Length: 317
Image 1 (cartoon, rainbow, N blue to C red):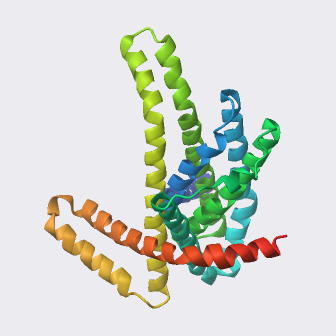
Image 2 (cartoon, helix red, strand yellow; image 1 turned 180 degrees about the vertical axis):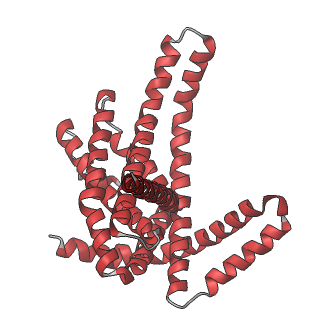
Image 3 (tube, helix red, strand yellow; image 1 turned 45 degrees about the vertical axis):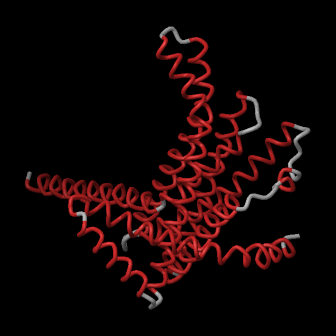
């Protein structure tokens, strides 16, 4: 009897450890997902453009195909690479994060630059075969999955960089949860966004109540503005996250002055408004990180477009 009780005690202890591990994994996944918010928002802002120009019955299948490609990117390619880095080359994580931050800054600054100095992008559309809808869909889906690979690589790298030291299986489970959670969040949101105007049109035409018809008309009218807002938010988030990654990377590599200065200025601003201390601290630091991201991104535009881009095009042939 005492042996049975001891066995039950051992089982209960193992169950407690397992439950604690699950809590740790879920908590770490949530924290890692929050750190990758800038990339997630940008992903959600970019993806709807790949479903535009098609009939309404093809929008959701296209998004589903991109979502499956995104999961393959994260789980079958990027997750094993992240685990290998964690085991054999952990010192590469911060440099990769910094490189990813630089890419985010470039992408965000390029969008700002294009908004301030718009120019024709007809040569981009010329690459797509618009005469054949099926071929066009294949091209758009393939392009979206390639873009997702870059964004997913940043998400997984950011998530890996936020994980505490733990067992390999815990890191694997956490990264897998992050991958699935973010994919569902992004592409579920995208599916809702691209169908929102159809929902609004349906309500405006068929709803019984007047307020429902008014809601439908409001949705149809609001969606273009909402997409513009989402794109703007995505750009701001890219600059904020990218800038913070550069500042953090500089601190790790021994140049801690910007990080310390930003924290000091944020504390001064927060003390001036004590009733919203946490919000003010975050807002000031995010703004300063965003300024760093914008400056760095603008500086990277000529390097990326005149040096790196041509080199990739040349050696990629």
